[in-house]
Length: 193
Figure 1 (cartoon, one colour):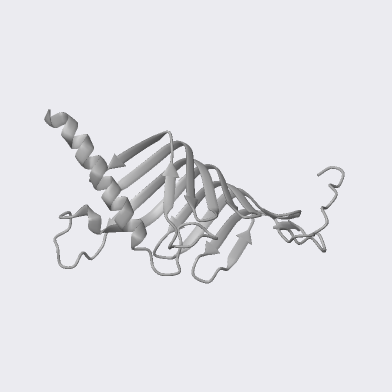
Figure 2 (figure 1 turned 180 degrees about the horizontal axis):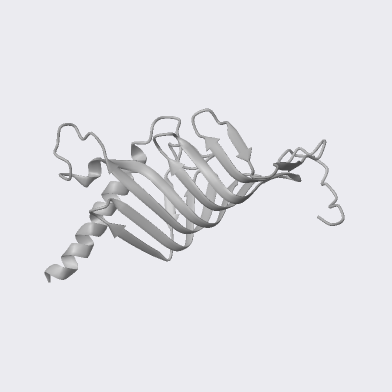
């Protein structure tokens, strides 16, 4: 039956495309903040819709992305691929020459790396700018240290993070809090927190 071969062919093409796109990430770059580009990327979801003509993959339902020690949870994750300069081949000839163009996620979004946690309503990764953004009700925490704002922009190249807000950015810094270090005394919760 030809109708059963077409979805199988598209699924195989998608797997080749995904492997190729993530494998071609620049050295030192990563898909998720705090992760290593040499680590494999594992994505699990309730459903995957792949659109070959648009070079788009949409993961939906309990999406979990893991790369190294970094884990991201989302409701929906859309990944767009770009058929870049493919060595003189005509566009559309081989989808394995595609690379990750951008990624968008609908939340709630949670990103965890060791003892650091980032939460937001949505996310966007732009490969050209090499920046990762969390937008809407952003909360960053490490131990009892917390920063809140409307948007976090993280530059994967430089490691610089900028938190901005329509109102004011708010931080709570606990002196002496050194999360993740052995022997650090546990902090007592304060009333109303």
